[in-house]
Image (cartoon, rainbow, N blue to C red; front, side, top):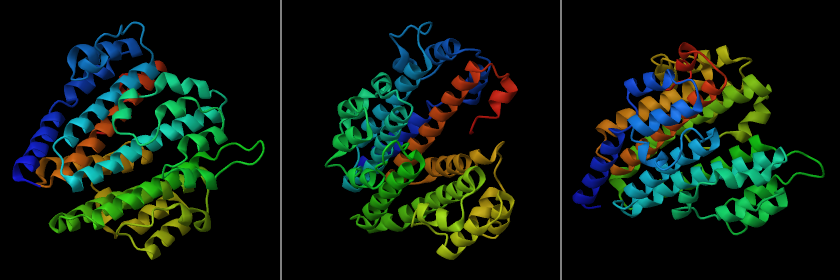
Length: 344
């Protein structure tokens, strides 16, 4: 990659991050009491104005607003990809895969509740610039077999085929999402290992492996806390990559409760990171870790691939913050309660 191209990505990503929501913006959004007020604030006072321009904030609803905001993320990915070299572009496929999986899961959830026709209202058309699956085909899905037909020929088909529900069974969204994500992580690791720029390989593997450890830790806690799964049930659902050993993962899966998980982790690098975190709920921990990790690397890393992926993760967290504020406003939560939902 030429130094000019690398510098272009570094400068572009950091300039984009400079337009992200500031503390003053979050304070303003915390004072908004409805979706209409949130839309108006974003339209008038933030870089999201272009995404919402032309829309009447008095008539916009939650789904429309989220779709419009997410489209900005896709446009940013497209803008950064224009400057990327082969290795960075290959890794950006991982980001696109995350977005595709999100759409597949959203569609399957609507099938599960008997409202598959509603997918078309939240379909992000701008994702078509990158997606290797047809969003139009997803919009036509009315059943699990329709989904298989829509994904035939894609890397997701074989995964979905394994989880075909039997007669009258509900679709197991949790298992499918984890299996799809694992396939995407596998492809990302393969991309890094096969990259032509060997000097980047170790740094990318270290950073990505740490993110996978954070994701595995989050999965173990979630599956233990909310589903009461045993070690035998959890281990096959973990990402088979990362810096934590299989022995350590097995110990974490055997832990009888979440407190014991943290006790086991305290002597690992993840445990040392956790001890420095500030969060309100345990389910925020992974996002807070990734937020801190990516913000550090976006500011300081000279590697354009790392800066690009860090920016996308940070924007995903920002979008999650906005969606949480929208939901909180709908339920009339006070500002101090809404503040606890934010990752920053």
